[in-house]
Image (tube, rainbow, N blue to C red; front, side):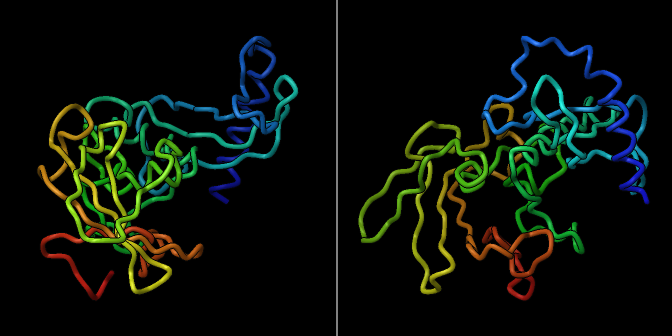
Length: 229
């Protein structure tokens, strides 16, 4: 019922304003026939666990200048200011296709912690790990694989190149990613520290952190739990 109310709310709002949207605006940059994204910002406070809570969701198709709506973000005014800016970044990355990296049943269990935007609630938020940038953001074209011993150099993930490596696992459905995190700048100032981060990737399509274990992304860290990985 709650989802139906939210869908009805955003669909009515879209129908109300669609005639006011200028025709010259490019609403479909990737030319897939759908509006890339719509953001609805509700004035006031969020209500935890109820209708008015930040989220990314889908609505029924509504034509706007020959393209249909599909994906939208519902954001709350008081969750966009100081202390809550991570909400905007988190929900927008959902729009691009990224999943949550926390466990829905155990949100306090630090599978990833402050190493990724999709797992933490901290302001300013951390960046995304290189795997998330590669798979969901498409900002990294590939993760080079290490297949033999040698000396390898990593740049911080804020660099545009040479910022990650992967190591194959004995399990064909898994591999390990190495990246260098440097506590600096706006979006890396919130991470735990500066140094090498190693995490395991599970490539099975039905594996997601939210419904794990097992987890799609699991960071090896001090005081980690093998039982819940």
